Image (cartoon, rainbow, N blue to C red; front, side, top):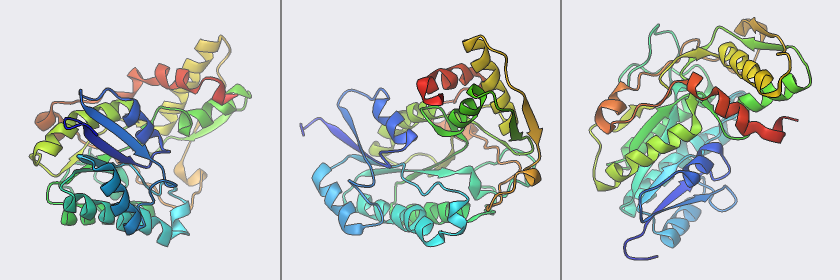
Length: 298
């Protein structure tokens, strides 16, 4: 490592956000290093300290999470180990090493009953185990690192795989689709989120941000049905075929193990005010999401 090099250790290296962070444009001298679970298990304190000693990062970005929302209902201990204890372990180790720390959290810390986009100091009330464990992680991070930055995001889309991939695979087979239309959120492009995190990174390493917790999500709201319908329409146009129908259904007609908030929109104006970044609306990114899937949808 050269004297002017700033290493950025990114956890959750196999995930879409970590991949987007490694391919994002960083300032000169910054070196992003993404480690997957096989290389860094954040539930293992010795492994965490060992990697921090080896990598000597100026900044750690925790993009690792137990994201199986329904699975977390039956595997609560595993979700707690990653989303709560693991996040706290990382934060404490980063503080000890005098490294900056950014932790990525979720809109699922809210119950979705507010009736307007949530701001940072709104009361949290998660409806499911995933949201509860992520909220525990936020608290531990803020307790254990005096300058940590927590970023709540939502409905991450883009990159290979995920919701868009699943929808387009079925569309490519000519299958009719049923998609929930009574859950509203703030769809967020993964590459836009990565760029915003890069923009915040130097501020974090130089000193505390004006707030220690921000909402950072796409500018416009949508339902899952609206996103699916737009993606299928774009895919059909791109491939010069007729679009398959996308039927709007209620959450009650698509039973899941975990409850979801009905309206978890996030208000990201504080981040825009303090760090000068506004994420685009989701409709600006639909064509990109469709193009990214490529042959993976076949």
